[in-house]
Image 1 (cartoon, rainbow, N blue to C red):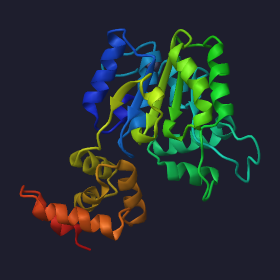
Image 2: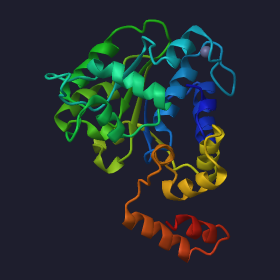
Image 3: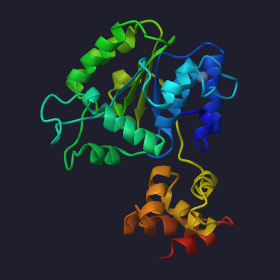
Length: 285
Ligand SMILES: [Zn+2]
């Protein structure tokens, strides 16, 4: 994943690039923001940029040995932890590495834009909730205790840190506080109120905002499969969430409940700017 593959978020890209160019990469960062704003793609692009052997100011090269492995999410120094639980396939002791093929497949197919619900569907969790469990926290410590294989930095991406099982937290806290040299933790979250304060205090916050309207419409129309009118209609209902917008384009159905649709419509009615009347029209069924 390169920065140029990610729609919008240009200020954040520049801020992250600058941390690398100024040689002040913080060892534990929390990418926090609502669903569909590009947190996971940005974490992947940032990690790829850090480890690229031929980067420019703007981006990783995409062709060096490291970039090629990063593009397949198969670099030996890139590690992932995410919420899991037992499934029909994994009937006991579920840990992230047992689901890595599903993770790579979903992340590569979606470009990193997928929701927790998409993930649970992918691994067949049905109505269960996944957690980041104690075994996975032990795995983090074990993995990071080895020297890196090829890169300067070992990167540990922990997706949806709010799903961390609280009893497992002390292990993670300890390694966040005293990380092995050249280790980068990129924690991703959508709900800061569910994250343990002790985790929050040990990470540097990188806050993401929902995508602007123009970025949503430009992204939807880029492939040529969606008209500008259709993209506008979806954009008004997506609330800056590219995952929801793409789903609506694919299925033709809105993610919003009738109440949310009504609320969005009412807000548009009360706005006085020029785009409000267009939005009111577009939101009408
Ligand atoms: Zn490269």
